[in-house]
Image (cartoon, rainbow, N blue to C red; front, side):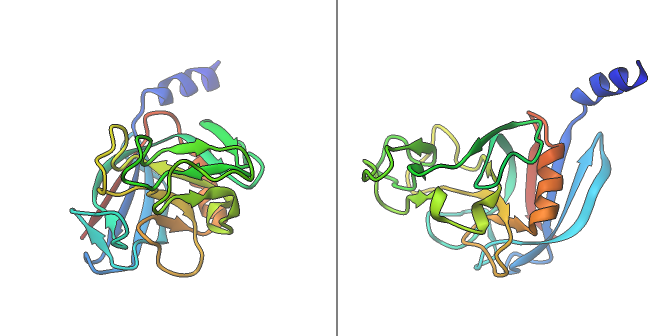
Length: 194
């Protein structure tokens, strides 16, 4: 009974992932996760954009956008579901992220029949082909619907590849899985410099 009461109480408890870089030009940051204002994971070293952080992120500029954003509500990946509370979509051939600023579905997940060219172009990503970064990832809801063309797309919390990202936040696989397993609907991520 106590476990049930605790689970119900935690459902209303805010979750936040905090990403703090030492400066706006840094390509590394510290990531921690809090619930009800108490740290539950981290602090851990994370990677951010190859050009640091920016409050004015634009498509392809290599910066990680600063601010507070929702995360999810779906987690994606090439790996089997690692036991998440959020919905999980295992990637298959034809799963794309639309990065074409001229597309009406800009900055969203799209499935196109395997082997067919998508109706969007630009910086769109064939998600099922990108390893190891997309073994497991969640959408950071920067420029989410309604997306502003050119403001940026495909900002994810994904698996670390050993180098700075193109604008995402990355963690080693085991640590990312630990964060994503804890996430509940309504979680937020805050990204900023010290």
